[in-house]
Image (tube, rainbow, N blue to C red; front, side):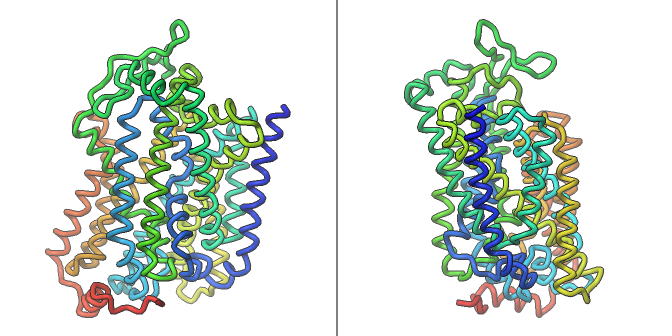
Amino acid sequence: MNDTIQILVAMVIYMTAVISIGFLYARRANKNSEEYFLGGRSLGPWVTAMSAEASDMSGWLLMGLPGVAYWCGLADAAWTAIGLAVGTYLNWLIVSRRLRRYSIRANNSITLPEFFSNRFREKNKLIMLISAVFILIFFTVYAASCFVTCGKLFSTLFGTPYQLMLIIGAIFVLLYTILGGFLAESISDFMQAIIMLIALSVIVIIGTAQAGGLSKVVENAREIPGFFEFFGMAVPKVNADGQQIVEAGKPLFNEPSDYSFLSICSMLAWGLGYFGMPQVLLRFMAIRKESELKRSRRIAMVWVVISLAVAVFIGMIGRQLFPTEHLTKSAAENIFITMSRAYLPPLLAGFVMAGILAATISSSDSYLLIAASAFSKNMFQGIFKKSATDKQVMTVSRITLLVLTLIGVIIALDENSVIFEIVSFAWAGFGATFGPVMLFSLFWKRINKPGAVAGMISGAVMVFFWKLVLSRIGGVFAIYELLPAFVFSSICIVAVSLLTKAPSKEIEEDFEAVRTGAVDDGQ
């Protein structure tokens, strides 16, 4: 009991620090909607980089990804990590600078739907409406994955009901997001990114030592069929309830499955999601100077590569140290918690647990804030009540936050939910809905409004259709839905744009001004 109290004390200290940041920036955040939703474009390179990655990775980095490695070995987790690392680099390299510039040219846009709408100079706000609707849908699912993380974390630590802990975690995130806005969120995300990296590093070092060294970890992994292979995958032998079978104290595995070229493409496709990820794209728009993006890219890449590699390795170490501790795919996502409690002093374990909480908060507040801005700023003020004051927008935003939190909690109520699977669907949704449109909007002058609309709708619809219908056929259709949906959306954008009227002269002038750098970005 004393250990549990020490863990709780450490986590309370952390949560107090996070709330203090919210209070510190609350007055500035509530000055106007631009400060609340984009921090007045004042982020420095370190905060931009670290907050972008922390808000992106979420609790799945400390629970979902190690859980995949623990359950079925290296291949799935490693190829996903490689895809994410490559996608991160390309997004910072290709998209960040031009989006920062274009968002200013597009009437100083402060949200993603507003950027797309202003980019095409639309009057009826159709693109804004479509963008806002899909952001609401996919970010509610995303927030649910974060609430699942909270529920699993606290119920595992304190032996309390999952649903109760889920609700408490959601309330904390809601209050914090309402209080501080984008700037407080970004500053705390910077702190949380540091905590996440320290937590991962501490556990992997101690875990490796407890396992007898790196060679012992590798040796154990090779003894499990398909576990330590890039082109094969371990297959746990499970009963009718999906629980892994254990005999003589050892978990049983079936013959390993082949990891095909199609499977590799499927996992690498995770990298495509970055081009449409609002929580990352907003950081590009919010940095104070375009020239600082290069430095931010380097910082972000160092953090991402280290964090992803360590997260995968934690799952593999955990399989050696606790081979029979987690016998379902869902339970496997608790391996980080199990290792922390087993090998760290309670107070230190509490701070490491705060790493999971950090990841969860840093993501869920981003998701909720962006979704709320999509409704209050883009739908309420942009379409339904154009005369709405800033105060009214802020009020609607907070009401929207409450509603979205409630929906997210309902989605997350099933304690057998697998964080990795929830995140993968929402990730595909954003990647296919906004990724192709973003790339074509920034780099192809001929794209027009009908093409953009077709791209968004076709990408989103294909994600649902592929996931819910085609993937059940198996074979080639078992590929991650993001890849075919991304390709289909791109085809629709090009085809519809070429078959319809070319963009106006004003739109083309905007594009050329951004391309040549003839935009005042505040430097």
